[in-house]
Amino acid sequence: MAQLQCISPVDGRVYVERVLADPAASEAALARAAAAARGWAATPLADRVALIGAALDRLVADTAAIAAEITWQMGRPIAYSPGEVRGLEERARYMLAVADDALSALDPGPKPGFARMIKRLPLGVVAVVAPWNYPYLTSVNAIVPALAAGNVVVLKHSHQTPLVAERFQAAFDAAGLPPGVFQHLHLSHDDTGRLLADRRVAHVCFTGSVAGGHAVARALADGFAGAGLELGGKDPAYVRADADLDHAIANIGDGIFFNSGQSCCGIERVYVAAPLFNAFVEGLAGFAKAYRLGCPTRPETTLGPMVRAGAADFVRAQVAEAVAQGARALIDPRGFAADAPGTPYLAPQVVIDVDHSMRLMTEESFGPVVGVMKVASDAEAIRLMNDSSYGLTAAIWTADEEAAEQIGDRLDTGTVFMNRCDYLDPALAWTGVKNSGRGVTLSRLGYDQLTRPKSFHLRLATA
Image 1 (cartoon, helix red, strand yellow):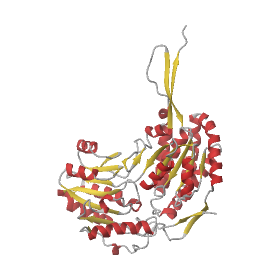
Image 2: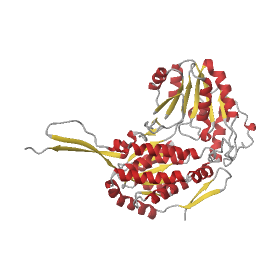
Image 3: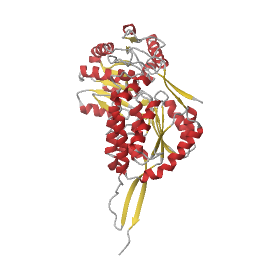
Image 4: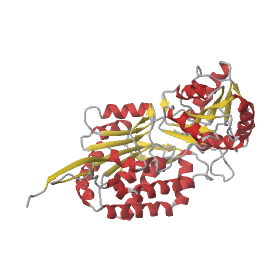
């Protein structure tokens, strides 16, 4: 039987091993989902919300165990892993709180002799394909609103974080969701493609790489299932001359290095107004040197390993290539005892004298590294920030709110931040442009792609 193995980046050992579902198991899961769909859609919204809330209570109660599993599966320091459950709760509670309003029928206004409305109906079977880097946060964005809207869900989680799928399953089962309403499958890539291509799947929510997004699109090519694709990023930050320098250094530094840089909306390139450039670079390098790289199970560790050695070596190669092209790396990795080529333990890095001819400034790094460039004006910063195949978020540090909004209007991104970065507010639509994907999660708009409109045009009986 084919199996998955979760190799822990902590020590390189097999942490979880599971038998992969075969085609017969996938077929059985889809049959159960299709059979459960009509009954779940007919369940009153208040009852659906209560059941989902009960499952959420169960997950929150297990925070300590879940945090330890996150650390062992993907390497985040244990000091930070509980924050993922807090974030999951924030997003889920918000989406449940706005469900009644977001799913209410739309009234187009009065028309004499008629009653008119547009109802929002569930799609049916929603497949969720989730990644390892924020394994609960990325999956809850789709799972909770899909279920609240009356859809049934089949979750395929990353082989790096299989216990996340099992935790969701246990929580929904304990809450009393009807059989077939939420299911998970551990699947190979090929069997995942077959699942997504099945005509019973009405919608796919995918978070992952651009290549993965293309694979999803190919799988859906012969059918009419919808897809929400949250893909990669090469997110920029711009520090204007009027920025609070100390705040910018600390906040941008956290946006670069948290989770070992393994965030689709982490900061991967920084543009700094010329008057602040030297002080900013000096401060950011000092910020990076203060990290404690080591075993993530230790409470004192502030920077854990990347998910696998190959990912860390990819970042090392990007930096080495940039240096060979004339860039300067400011951090000596020998100052971090745990850093070693061929391992997932990678020291943070700040690189200057870079330009957009270097892969480091254009290709997604997904690691604890950043390139920093000096700019002479807002116009130059905007041009460079838009010079990317990605468009997820952009962040501006300034004291001028009006300027931030005007700059933001000219940026090709789904989200614009001012004086913060790398954060999802559940009240705001999470979306991207260009190679960062398509579709929307979170906010009231997040329910739109998980429902379909059905119009009612009723001529009233005459007296």
